[in-house]
Amino acid sequence: MSDPIKKSFISKGLENRKSQNLLRRMKAVKPLSGAEIEIDGRKMLNFSSNDYLGLSKHPLLAQRSAEYIRLYGSGSTASRLVCGNFECIEQVEKKIAELSGYETALIFNSGFQANVSLLPALSDRDTLILSDWLNHNSIIQGAMLSRCHVQRFRHNDLGHLEELLKKNTGTRQGRRILIVTESVFSIDGDQSDIDALARLSEDYQALLIVDEAHATGLFGKNGMGLASGKDVDITLGTLGKAWGSFGAYVACGKDIRDYLINFCHGLIYTTALPPSVIGAIDAAMDLIPAMDKEREELISKSGHLRKSLKGLGFDTVTSTTHIIPIAIGDEEETMALSRWLEKNGILAMTFRYPSVPRGDARIRLSLSALHTWDDIYLLIELLRRWRFDRVE
Image (cartoon, rainbow, N blue to C red; front, side, top):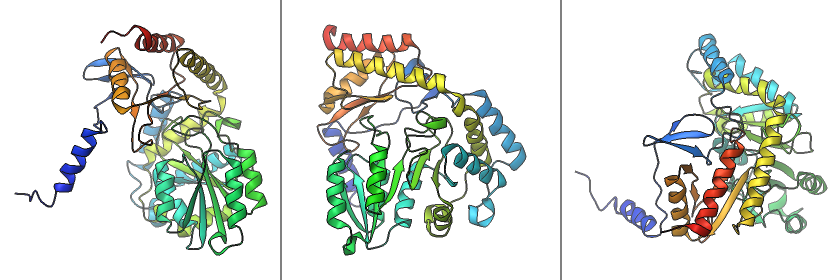
């Protein structure tokens, strides 16, 4: 029989989250398409998925995935530095580098794994990491694991960033400086100024790292992100969102790739991705560069939805992309809206503390290229009813 005393922190922690309307639970989901899911036998429109281009159920990805299983087996069998560096992985990395305009690329097992291991590999005790205030938790955790000096600059405030660069360049804690940001921010759905960041990076000889998780597939040349073709030292893209598969990549120069192969523990000590995943990534790369029409339509629908929500009096924060928050503030009210939408056939998940600051709860809408105009109009009508005609 387990001792209740030694696990008291668990029950207390759960009760604390429950009392603040912050307790999280998982739902069993059956995907029907890139825009529809089934939960508890009910079909719903999905406005919470990161499947931005609807590729997760594309037949070419499934076909290529099965083909790679036949060719290479179901598992990679080891880390890449042992015997898991299958030729198909390096072939896909070459395609990523070519499409993104970098000298080379390196595949990681996930975006979270890449950030929490990339930053420590690039840092020593005299390194200063300058991190945007709204950077993803994986970047925050990676900075903490680096055990170096970390300062956060106000969100997208390049003036504040330059103040910190001036103050710290040439000091002991600024012997090596990393500027870390996202190109499209996952919480507010806004964008960073890549060109200005690149100029600051050059002026102060700081290494610029841009996380393109929510931009790859949707923005830039070949759909390879806002940093594609720009003077950015390292870009990180995820392959489980617009790419419809799984994993992540770092695009960089050959010297940085060689360095990471030797110093990045998250790569060195991890079993390589299975061939089926590599096959799906390869197929997505054949599709994404030619999906300009889908990207344009997604941007158009996102703009219309954002404008309509503002017209209804909803706060969409600073969103300029396919990620559109509805800032409510109160956790209970936010949960109530999410439940009401779900009751009416829309899955729109909440983001609450600790994903956002306390009192900053919101619904985060994520649009897919597979959402039709009728889907958008239905969502707008439901939100109008919630705003003006709802009967408790």
